[in-house]
Image 1 (cartoon, rainbow, N blue to C red):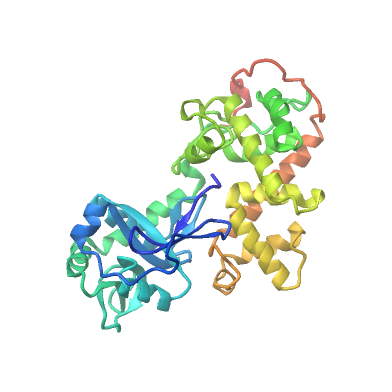
Image 2: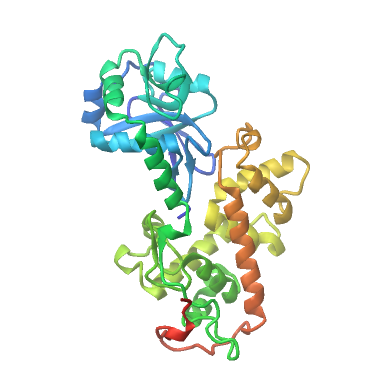
Length: 381
């Protein structure tokens, strides 16, 4: 759920790739060379459409390693009609974006641009097509025509509705179980023995892992989301593969919790520079929003005179990463994020953990043995 990559170009169109942690990988030859525009037939033949845009809530942003934003989702639908994949190049400004289209390093600028550049063709796609439009290279008239023929204004409301659903809790299919199975006996869930068994992988109190698990899946081992997250700890298939969790075992409570604990352990090592008293907050925030966004917020905190190792201070800049003043700052590598969601996520887990600490002992094995299905009276209606 944390691992992903922004690609800045397509084959023969660009020469560098940027990882979520800001590492730039440049292929032999260094800077990209000037290329002519790919025709629509070339795009279909190569199986890939390259879009350039800017980071923002209405353009493109990374959400749990899944692209979101109206312009991106529209372009994704267009790519699907062509039967090709979509690759995204997030630019710093419109000047960079236009130059990439002019040089043939990208196929379409999925951004509302003034129709003033004589080297570009403009397509009536987007929210304000009367004044601003998407752009393609002037030489690629077939792509411009295909976009104009495909786009219908009614698509905007449809895509916005789909995006709102994906961002809502309704997009996660799960049964909602009680956050505390038996207060009197100190039993949090029917999976307590597994949280205790794998807590050493995360180097974290098992009750904290239980609190995170409830936030992710409400203790439903069959929970799944539209983005592909699966199981108790909502592990993405790509992440599961990197953690050694076979896809066919992703719903197994034991293997899913083990993978989630391993991921938490990796994040703990990633934030080894953070004092132990603060580290869990950074780990939880990264589990939800991605460590690259959290690192961006830490850089902003330091820039504005705060303590980048203190979550209370960093969380203020996590929130500000939804403000263009901050997510467009040159020191920010990964743009816009839904920071309010991540800050709320951390707070909810910490509050639930505090409640668990009042009822379940650190080493309690009251719920040892094979997990049994929760009785009906423990389910919310």
